[in-house]
Length: 114
Image 1 (cartoon, rainbow, N blue to C red):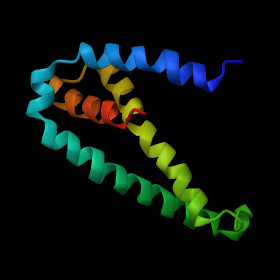
Image 2 (cartoon, one colour; image 1 turned 45 degrees about the vertical axis):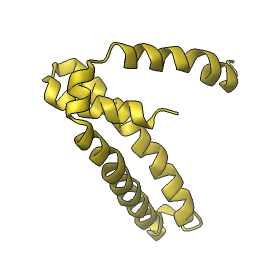
Image 3 (cartoon, one colour; image 1 turned 180 degrees about the vertical axis):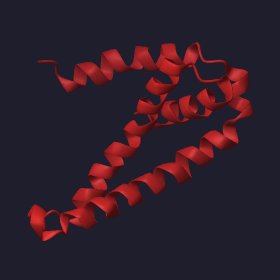
């Protein structure tokens, strides 16, 4: 099993560097306002929307999850919101979406990387 330090110190930085180096910079900086809007507002919206929805589902007595707190649901939703751009990019690559939609999501993904 691989240690997480090996992944974060040795494997992830070259992947992020390679991805950001070959990204077209002109469309990225033309869309920097959209990228930052998606990064801040979209992530906060996703975290609270998913977190409160999960908390509401946990309060249903049939599921027997009343002991799961709001904080735990918000933590889980923050992980889900961070992975949202990765899933969108996978779909965009599959259907060959145009660059105007691809660059803002790609920029958001690069901004949320650790």
